[in-house]
Length: 284
Image 1 (tube, rainbow, N blue to C red):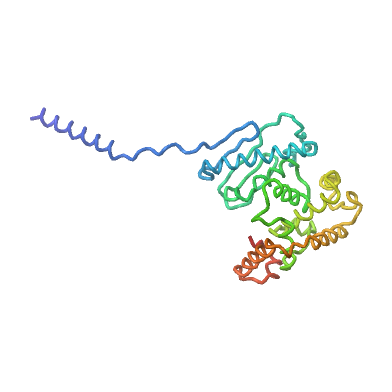
Image 2 (cartoon, rainbow, N blue to C red):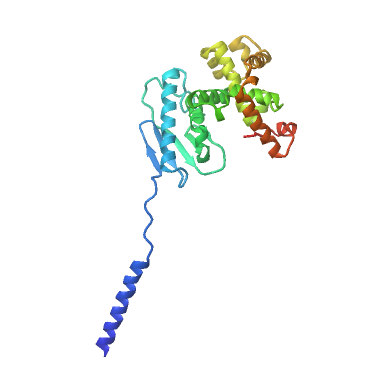
């Protein structure tokens, strides 16, 4: 009996083991790698931040934008110069891959001496190119630093919602949402309107005076417009506003589409434009 009982116990144990093997969940397939390296970039991804297709699109945008900057501006770039002194220009030199961190947070993208931090949900807005421009040209002061990043991003990736910075700024002026481009105000907070206006203003400076004189301003003393262009800050602001008026954007369909979208945004926010302006909030 003891042998039979032992056999039964062994058989039961075998059956339980087999059942456990059948019922145990299958191991999940391995996830995407946390890093992606190329000759020019080292991307690190927070788990769940971007799928494979979005990663490929991000890398393609970065490579494309870097190649365009290298082709046109290698003599004036200062890659990674945030707080590290003057870094070497690109000019064909072999540089370490640019570090890009992709995160899931609801914060803002930013650039520092270590590289770029990109919020995953901002990828489709081309914030990667915006931050890459900051990294390549190095720091400056508001509004010329953000204006350059927005202006070149628009040139490289196309305008936001098919409405360029000039048109967006004209709509902001007409809706009384634009306040000023005084650096002390922008240093406290920049709204979407401020970014658009900065891009439009930088575009005016570059198209009027050329890249060399613009970079004299970018690399020079804060607000030294007269030293770079021979005109005062207020004279340049006035000339920029006059140029916007001459563009005759108010007769285009794009103007009315973007104005309608902006007006709806103000209404949905439940606050009058004057209050939104005071708070420095963005509509979109």
